[in-house]
Each structure stands twice: as C-alpha cells, then as structure tokens.
Image (cartoon, rainbow, N blue to C red; front, side):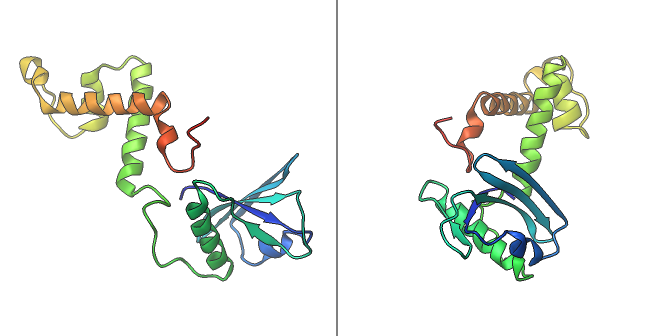
Amino acid sequence: MLGTTIIQTGTEPTGRLLSDLSWKAVQSCACSDGLHYVLTSTFGRFRLWRSNLAAGLSPAFLIPDDALASLRSEALYRLQLACAGQRAAFQTSNFSPSEYQRRRLANMLAMLDAREAGATIRELAFTLVYPNSRLLRGAEWKASGEKRHVLRLLRAALKLRDGGYRGFPGFDRSI
C-alpha cells in the first residue's frame, strides 16, 4: 500500500487512536514539527503525523488541498475502517501498484543491481527475466525478442533511477 501522511491536530493525545485497534507494530519518531507514526495492522500500514499545530480540544484530521488530496482522503477512510475493525471492500488502482507492477519494479531494481555488479545483458535475460528459458547463443540471441525486451526493461529501470520515479503518485515533481 502506498503510504500517505494523514495529519492529526488537537490537544487530545493520540493514544485514543492507537488503542482503538490492536496494531501489530507502532513506530514513532518525534521531530520538530510533531510526532510521526507508522501504524501496522492486519488492515494495512498507515502513516500518521500528529502536528504541533494543535488548534482545538478534540482531534481533527486535515487533508491538504494538493495533488495527493484524493489519495489522502482514501487513506483516511481506510484508517477509520481499520480503527472500526473493518477492511475496505475495494482497492483503487491509485492507491497501490498491482502485484504485476510490484514484481516488475522489483525485477528492474534487481537488473540495475546486477548491471552495477558487471552482469551482461544476456546474463540479465537468462537469470532474471527469463530464468526458465533455454540460453540463446550467437545470431539467435542478437535477433531475439528476448534481447530487445531486456534492453527495454533496462532502459525503463535506468529512467526510473534517474528521476522517473517522481512520476509515481506520492512524489512531488518539484523535488
């Protein structure tokens, strides 16, 4: 699940929220702008920022009006469901990459690591991309679709490494 920060303000301690559900793990970090939490349960992982800008007596959740407003709204909805012991009935494609997309991104990272360690295009092809295929040699390899596919994946991985990841939801293009 793509993490998005939900901002909570108010003078009431966040303990009420943390006791609403038995979280598997709660990590927190105190920073100059408030407390940052990562809450993990059977319903997912949530990032919560308890701001120092405590404005009222009861807690409130703020969603900034920016490019991630709809994503944060959905994350808040899922957090409220989790606190009530319920799971969201559906998952939008904006919220999390599909299983295929996660495997593809992990494979591209592995390709970059292997290439950095000195692996050839052919080694990438038959160890990471096509591990169950027979090894192609000579002219058969040069003219193969497998070689072209591996080169396309490697170019996409290099593009992501060189800043293309900023096009993913959750990244500010001005960084």
